[in-house]
Image (cartoon, rainbow, N blue to C red; front, side, top):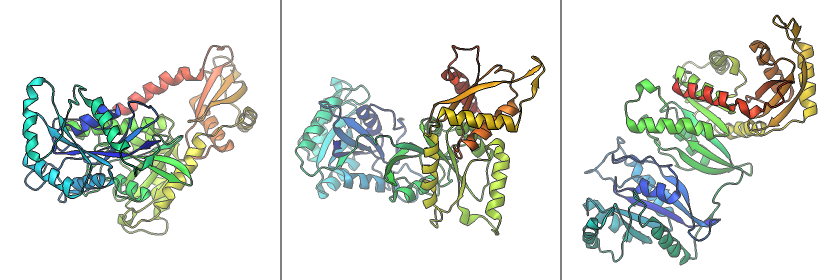
Length: 473
């Protein structure tokens, strides 16, 4: 268990995200010299310098901006609203100051705001990269503060002394909230899709709070926002990702970094939820994202959002729309589809139910006896063709499930390389249906009996190569 919430605040570009990454020993926050990069609240765990099982929850926030200094494209200062929520939730606030540029009028405004709200504040002067910057920090005493901690997040100077100071501060408080450092066995659910499909709105609906920023501007989400939630007494981690456009349409460095993190999130997820806009249809990019998830054998759920905007709906509109998606995805017709409207809160509650079913299938294991029975039924139903090269048919000896997440089956046979691809697809489909794996992709490896040294995981190199090709598409 960890106790205490610590929020990092400050002006844009003072090094908050660099400090967050350094303290959490991660690279969750996108770091760039451009001000205003961070928008959403990012959560991370800082382990105790004395006890690996203890620590505190750290929140990275967007910069404090006003009308006279505003870097965001939004008509409303929604980034500051997220920061205010972090300040409200925090037991301790780290106000980060820029030791290189010195004091700024916004620093006075922030100090005043924190004092008016009675927050417990640790003032941190960042970018103290050398002794020549020590004298620059003296001017911050004009803010009316008595103590400052000097760090260089970029060069990892003074950061762990700061962590020790935070822990000491938290120990002096008796009303700290406790949190689980990690949700044990929590399934990771990735929300992916093109920009402005409604991923952040769906996340907020599912978790019941304004966790992610939502605006009419495409590309609002930049960092991958993770949120813990409990559904049917089971833990889940929802991952809201940046919208993914085609590589040819990406000209901004920050968007490129965001897209790469979104693609990596698919690899780390247990279930992938592809969110698409009903009024735009399944685009080529949506199909690529679906194929990428399936190439990694991830359970996939398609959510057709903004169904309220679909024109001229009739009784069979949803059915025809689903058939069109299945036709475009061809061999992935088993993928479940939910038609929803986040704006009108229609069928959003069905998403987690579908996710739960997919995850249960993803971690399912079937006994060797049942696998062999299913294989025997499939071969009897459709006998493999004679192989011209050997003038004989493929003979299957036995099959077994060797792992789950995803379910992986190895089939031993006399000839493995010569089996027709169409027959392999037939067997995969029959095994998925007969063994009740549900609507998820399964891996089936064919091994010649003479290849005793072969192992299923040897094919992972081939899978990785297919994944790389999918990301380049």
